[in-house]
Amino acid sequence: MNMVEIGFEEIASYLRGSGWRRSLSGPFAEIWHPRGDDQCSVFVPREKDSPDFLTALKILTKEVSRIENRPERDINLEISRQFVDVTDLRAEDEDIADGTIPLSVGIGLFNSAHRMMVSAAAATLHRQSYYGNSMPRAAHKHARRMRLGQTRPGSYIVPVISSARFGALVSEEFGEPRLEATADESYFERRMLTTLSRALETLSQLTVVHGRTPSKLDVLGAVDEGVSSELCAAVLDVIGKGGVEAFDVTFNWAPSSPAPRGLPEKIEFPGAAAELIERVEFELKETNAPAERILYGVIRRLALGKNDATGHVTLETMLDGKPRTVGFDLPLHVYRRAAHYHGERRPVIVRGFLDAPPGRRATMEVTAFDADRSVASFEDAEVEAE
Figure 1 (cartoon, rainbow, N blue to C red):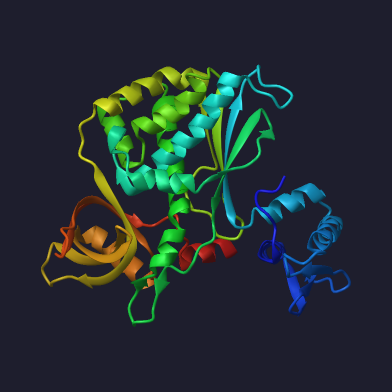
Figure 2: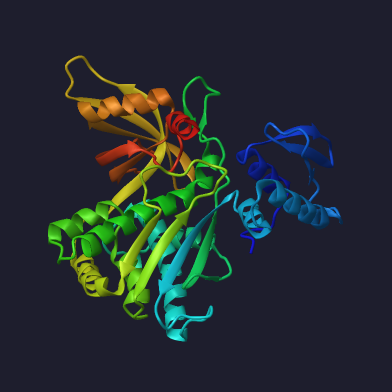
């Protein structure tokens, strides 16, 4: 089962990542060899619309399978996954057998997928304990971009597919780091999943790992990591209303780009955690904390006076679909990190209270500042290569 329709870019990305090298290139096809073996080769078609493309793809898959000693099905699946992130939602229960699932559980699982992605999109824009009728329209818009793959065996798995085709975020055309607006938009779905992974991990720590009723302070702190009442409801659609024994979410990052670092690959919720999650959901609805805005961007300028206790940062970000600069102050120990990220040309994430009146200078009271972990830096790429 392929994630997406395969084209030349997917094939080339897979071969490159698997250590193959291109030895001959033409307008309609290429020849690739395994690294260190010039005796073996595969013919790679370039024109997806040509009548013999699918035939050539089957021959290529069979030959790669033989050379790599791996099943053709696995080769095909990995080629199709090169430019997509796949999030697997899995329900496990004794009633799930032979690839079938009780209707009520299946409805809960599909509802959970939708709610989960909408809540993740919302938390990527604003951190809020309960959205209710104030759910950002953009959250629904971004969630609609996600696709559902075919259900798979393995208890019962629903794969959610999102794009992982990214452009270069930072331009040096003007002699200083500038944000590429179109590229920034291409990262939103990856940022959504990064938010979702962190939020689910936090919710699991609160309700599964600790195994006790969390304090109000713990619940409030979880909002900082993207946990919301809506996210709790998404999990409860499966282990609460659905009543299954276990529910887990696995993140399969696109092989074509470095995966976000420091995130769990899989988060699990046993059915026994439903009661605690319901309590967290209730607390989040009752919490009256102000919403905080999330900004992603690149640092344009830094300013620090000789005896200043804080440093000033000017960030270029996207507001309402348009590039805009936002100014804010950081304490010295955080400002030093900002200077490091600026020197590395690394995108950053800022959370806080935004004041952006039309036609006037935008400012922010910052509560959290860090590198944008959903975007790989030079340092990350070097770590991946080692």
